[in-house]
Amino acid sequence: MGQRMVQLKVDEQTVSVPEGSTLLDACRALDIDTPTLCWGQTLTPANACRVCMVELDGARTLVPACSRRAQEGMEISTDSERVRLNRRMVLELLASSVDLSTRSEERRVGKECRSR
Image 1: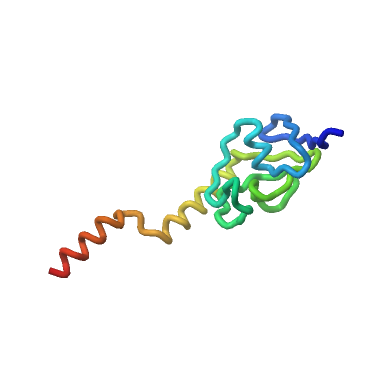
Image 2 (image 1 turned 90 degrees about the horizontal axis):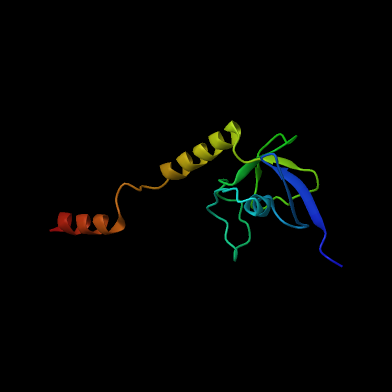
């Protein structure tokens, strides 16, 4: 007996994925690029970065595509204004917590120069 399939819509495109698949799996089946930072094939979804959030029709909040299981009849949007705004905010928050203005080698050299 074959694996049960679940049918849903992603950005108005119908897709069928094996039961137990995530929304991220459904997006990838349609070649829809959904950004992730904390997802990896060998990792358990951490839901930490929140970059993969998508809009689920009827849901009050955005949902993480990396861990939310696809269900029959779901309709999700990966590129709505709400999703884009959320991703921008998450990236801005991440960027504000890390100084990316200099490389570690430049900092090391700078410290050596100041100590002379």
